[in-house]
Length: 357
Image (cartoon, rainbow, N blue to C red; front, side, top):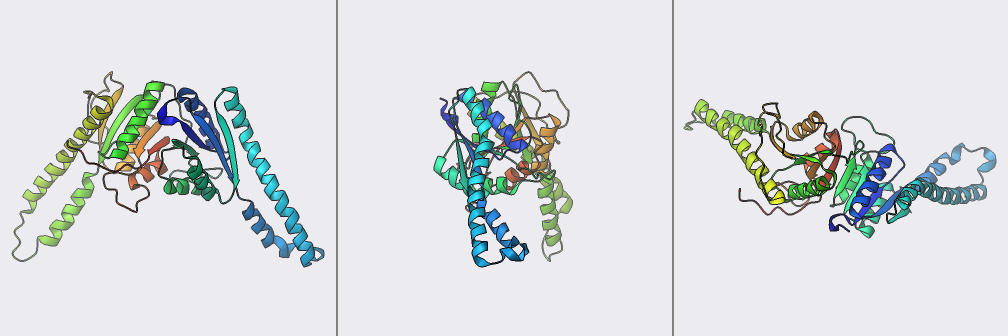
């Protein structure tokens, strides 16, 4: 059994995305010898509350307290037993498919508020990888993430594969987001593990937003230039700043990509590295790894790049170099999850130890 993926937690609600997640879980478990736990939460209490709200609308013959209480008891029994059986029936085809493939599998269903129940099962089960759909039955367009998915993601610092579309695992294309953080390196290690197993092409990307720094500089200049006794050569300083920001951050990006590649693969490839968006300034060489430095709004450039190459999965660290206590997930990671054109692997947080580039 591969130690990296010993146990997979599959969150399943019978929606299209959860069915796609179960199909990928089957492939991953078969490839790595993983145990799989299928999880489904049902909220009987919500239905009981809805029944209570409807009580005043019942005919007069049912308004006596003893009759209402009897109806409540009957309804409660039916809902609890019925929803448990429905939940198990959802998971029965999943169980059958894993059994046919001779993969270790078991189902867990539990009553409670969906995300709270999943959280409690995750705490009990542990697991190396959580598979969950980005939404259930009510997906609502670009940028939409279902409440269960986002709450489970925010509440649990672990490795997630979040499904937004089917994941092709036959010579797939992976985009790995690198920023020098330890979490990003973990994401790259998982990408390498899967790439070796499924012959994937890996695209290493680093993003920086020079416009942010330019805007801050302009605001600083405007606040200082008219102060009495302050000498400020606006044009000269602006040119120096632009030269440093545009070229300096790009150089940092190149170094981070090379350092990450060397740390995980033990070697550095030489191929065109582009600094203005992703452009088409050069063709990708024959190496299985491609490196790109993307300039612009970071999460958007990552998502656009993934769309441009028709990526099958994006890998991102849960937190970046600017992590501070109290953060549940970094803004870039969350926005990539929201706007990615494909499924997203989110690596768990790791303390940033710093790099010497």
